[in-house]
Image (tube, rainbow, N blue to C red; front, top):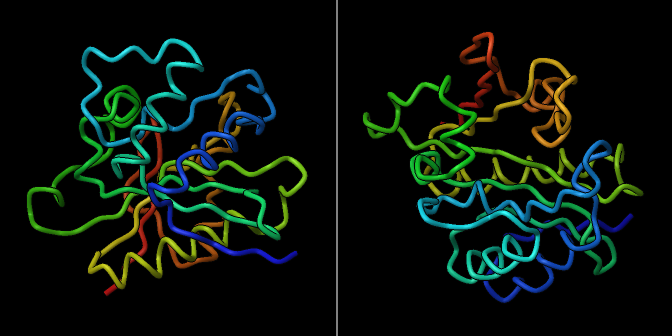
Length: 196
């Protein structure tokens, strides 16, 4: 393997969309093409995300406008992985944040603490279990430190019975990289890594 991790840039919009076009999101939801548009940090009111075609158009727009942020993993020039990572404060308008993240504490947003949030990993099926998600997470943490963030935060599922549970990453992967459980409820876990 010759893995290169790149920050998502506007000029990679078509590559990004094509990766979602051909890559199953998760073993249990192969037909679902989310394009990560619901974690884009943009106001969701009045937007129609009902079909893959509509989500793809929003994805192209959002990547070009830096609304979707994250990292792509390339193997010999081919995209094999994706990690969605954005400033926590930017995500309060995300439709998925509103639906699923009501258990996450928000005190830090109002106190000046800078938190980078990690929402999603998507790895090409033939490249899973090869450490690519970990490499993506390492790059998120490295760049977040360089960009002046205090913490990186992630939201893995407690159990793997949710139909798309793999996309949030695994608790053990985060622990191996210095994350600790910061907050836990029946709904979910918040894991954090202190950067400073």
